[in-house]
Length: 87
Image (cartoon, rainbow, N blue to C red):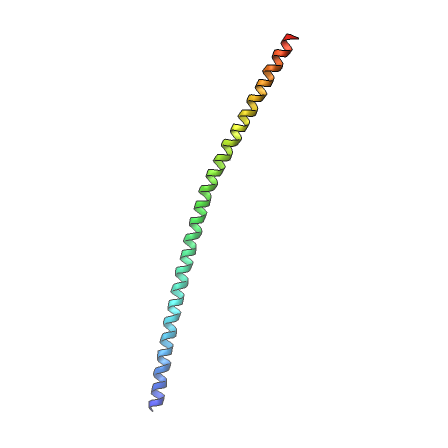
């Protein structure tokens, strides 16, 4: 009789420990998935902010380049006009 009861208690304890482990594992999985989600959102936000800065820098660079080209073309045009006037 004792042997059967001790077996019953052992199975009961083993089942309880298994359920606790399953609960712990599922809580850990939930925490990990939440951390991944937060990290994903943060990286996306940071990436958009960096891209915004890079895009502005590129636009400023292209504007300066076009202004230099326009200035060079204008100087060339003025020089050609002055040459043509004296011919």
